[in-house]
Length: 389
Ligand code: GLA
Image 1 (tube, rainbow, N blue to C red):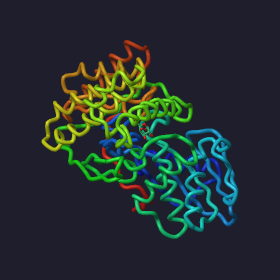
Image 2: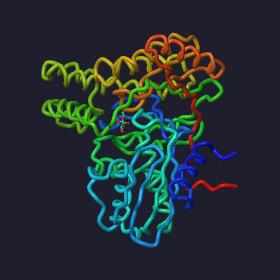
Image 3: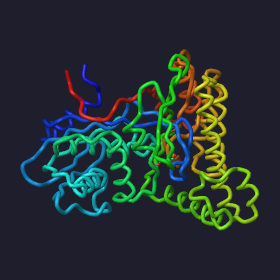
Image 4: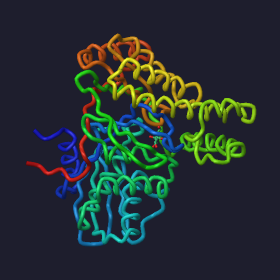
């Protein structure tokens, strides 16, 4: 049986006169640990998941790029040789940005109808934007002769999001989408742009996505504001520590010693970053040793730090965090992605997934009068064309 996401995409394409073309998929991600530290050069531990963005890419004879999505209103029609600024392109800014960068890299792009559908809740911290960018990069590069290597797709997606769309995000999401590997977390050093894989004990751990049922729009500015606040803290610290190039280079001790030099808010932002950088290093060791209880405690601390120091949580995410930890089979939980709404991630024992989900649904519904979406997650797959057998 075809995957429901692909059937929904084909049904939408058929209903809008856009059937046919080649099918591509890229995964979303959850981040086990490392909140808001990728753009400070820290190491992060994301996992690519089985939910993501699918798209049909149908070549056309003229030099136009059209974009339509089953999940967003509007249909966009651009001249490939004169792509619009991102602000005029709605959600189609993401594919348009990829097309622009591929052209700048010397690729001969044919005209193309891109039809998109996702099974990641958009704006929920599961990296739907990066999955869309990576899927588009794979689709357009394939149509233009040769698919990009996943690492190239990740780099191009990052440049499209920061340079074209204008979000000041780090490299984590496109790298996780492009390079994630089943059974592993990606260990990504965002300063050195180096990565390897941390094997996860799949028989002892399962992932559950907990949706707070509120959304944020990364383009809305709250994210960029946090980036600006924490970079301001970096600038002050650099006056005292000239060798540092990013907050990842600062130890907790160094920061605490310079506390008097920073205003309270920049200090808080920086303290989240430097303690989170230290937690992720420790987490890697714990995961390699299979010490999941201790790892879960780091997730718990990470959430508290995101909540009180970086201030990117919401009451509903905090409630999900508390509710999740009230179940005896839960190792740890934290907001995943940018925060400001969206999803939390819980790591639980595989034997308790069902009772854990029932527990969270009941407690959340009682508190907020709304049924949350709770989904067990599986590992994702490498991005690229989906060849159907
Ligand atoms: C968003 C950004 C990422 C990262 C996370 C927070 O998902 O796109 O680069 O900063 O937020 O960890």
